[in-house]
Image (cartoon, rainbow, N blue to C red; front, side, top):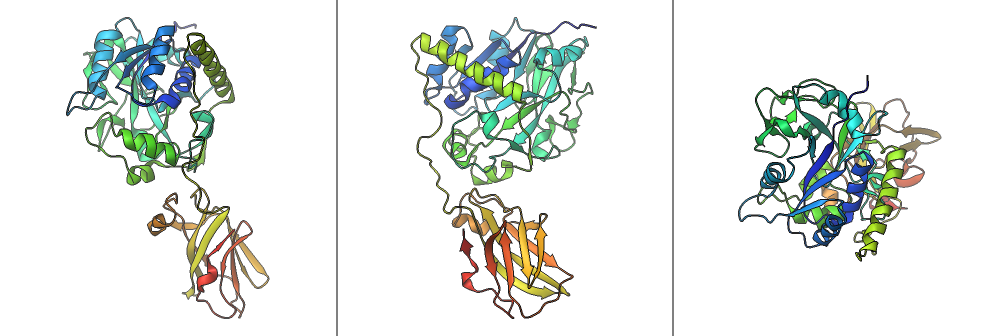
Length: 415
């Protein structure tokens, strides 16, 4: 049965998002979104000028929206966008500039994905759960699309993924809620997941987070920190559009820089976005707007070393086991993933290592991840008077002297 496809618009508030605007628009146009309502929260990095040029081309509808003293701008902006400007839309996805709607199945159109859900006459909102993406251990703002630079995310069960954003049926909208993730619907309307099930509020945090994390059909990739440079120069500086006075510092970065597993955007979508960005750039040039490069010409963060570096802190016998403790990281700050131990002629390779936090490394290596500490156990080896060698992918981290387990200071070796 061919179901009618709903028209879907997007409403968002932008502030100092210049490097990402064209990709974000091209990405969602590739999924069939035609109308964008953008509240411009007084940007000073060129975002306002770019949005105005896109407004002049008819690509977006730019609505200047200054913050009121002592008031976070996000919820008032949503109230204006939905209450004043988006009357004629069927469905409106209310998302942010660092959130990208991504199909997880075979469909290539957001309208096609939502058609069977929109066909249910009592469905007033469909929620999209987050998929938190980390820095992919990138330090600097390099060239390329956001969705091709950042390819590692948190596991689906990660706590922050319980957050959702809303695709709202305009006829069902009653009012904004106390947070930007949820909306109050008119009586008689339901709020559902992309798998058709009703949204159950999170037991601890309530509405705005769901009890289940559902990625069936479509989800919301949230590039929440990007590279360390982008986080510090943009995310941390901008603060929060939802909470007055909120500071997003190192603790925020560490909590959300999740690179647990690789997961890329479909190739067809990346190709469509590249073509879309190129087309938008040509159109902008035609009206006299000069599109400037977004990547940093000179890296702001230079790795303090190349390759890998680490230290064997202690080698000791513990209950009949040989216990080796230390730390090891790549130049990106990511924990070293393969460690090798050699005793005499015998060699053991560890791809799964007991990790622990080494926050003390931050003062020397600001880019270091929390879980750079390692602990290895060998229970089946004889312990002759021989040196013990610890390697990371063939690069020596440290070794004990022959016949003695305490590790000397020169065990710190860079490669």
